[in-house]
Amino acid sequence: MTSFMFDRFGKHPLTKHQISVPTPKPGEVLVEIKAAAVNPVDIKKRNGDLRFLLPEKHPAPTGHDFAGIITAVGSAVTDFKVGQRVFGKLDDWHIGSFADFICVRTKYIAEIPTDWSFEQAAALPLVGLTSYQALHDYLQLKPGQSVLIPGGSGGIGSIAIPLAKALGARVTTTASPKNFTRLRALGAEVVLDYHDDQALSKQPQFDAVFDTRGGQDLIASFDLVKANGRIVSLNAMPDPQFVADQGEYFHLNAFKRVILKLASAKVDRLAQKHHVWYRFMLVKSSGQQLQTLTELMQAHQIQMPIDRTFTFADTQAALDHVEAGHAQGKVVINH
Ligand SMILES: NC(=O)c1ccc[n+]([C@@H]2O[C@H](COP(=O)([O-])OP(=O)(O)OC[C@H]3O[C@@H](n4cnc5c(N)ncnc54)[C@H](OP(=O)(O)O)[C@@H]3O)[C@@H](O)[C@H]2O)c1
Image (cartoon, rainbow, N blue to C red; front, side, top):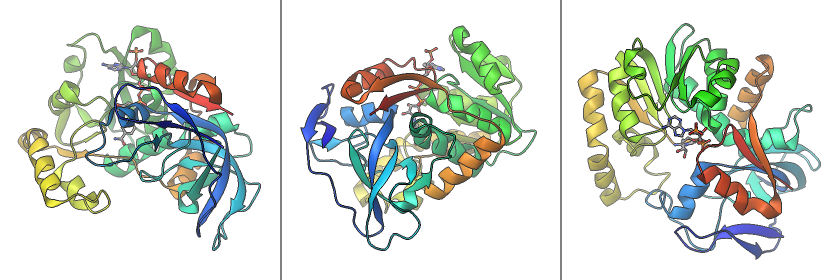
């Protein structure tokens, strides 16, 4: 089978590898991939940006999201069977959905709703789970609360906006004017031009911020949120609570823990100064949560917007499109 991989760190294209179809281990199923989605994390992995948390050997497979058909099951699998249409986000240590087949533990997959295409299903897992975990688990949004979701037009924003609305929150987002109409249709009450530095400071303070940008945008968020409000960031250094909770999962030794403590100190001090609850998060794979999310989307008639589709042979072009940074929704690879 074909698997697209990175042969070394840096701005080098994917290379095509011919490898054997894997055999499912106990608790795993083998999935013939029909569609996969690209995420900015695939570019970050290529660059080596995540190697502090997730060291890897080359050639390194990539691709986190997939949708396909189960073609074999390992021993002890009772919850899924051959022929089922399933989708999911692969776990951090076993990625590689830019391939013809993948073995995955059943706890990370869910059945695709009968009226969803493989393309629709593949677009959802990583951004959908991230948004659900951020809004529901970390920010614990309540009906009537206000939330700022910067970067509304990308993969995350396009699902986070309707999800936040489905949870009863009032959404403010930022985007380029060309995307304003689309984001209002997704459920944003206020849409501001991200090129205007002053636009957000003129808004009333928010109950919560779902920071998708990091850097100065994250720093500025502490002035935009109410005292006792909440901020969760996708693009920051792991904070001490993250390290305490997930240090073992990421095999963080004492040296790495000290480095992370120093690196996150500035933001942690800001959180204390502003009396704001703050966390960095990394999305977790979960078939059960994907099922809950799918049901929520169906109940509220939410769809994952797809920006462009590419063929499997054009996987590198799909990555280039995401790297350009202007996707309006998700970028999907079809087999
Ligand atoms: N920690 C985690 O677990 C986790 C999980 C998922 C994603 N992430 C990270 O979250 C970030 C967002 O992911 P994504 O999938 O949404 O990315 P994406 O789809 O590539 O985002 C592209 C969008 O960002 C918009 N944009 C660019 N600069 C902006 C700015 N300064 N302000 C507001 N919008 C801007 C672009 O709009 P224009 O075309 O108008 O410029 C474009 O529509 C990425 O860095 C990703 O790696 C982290």
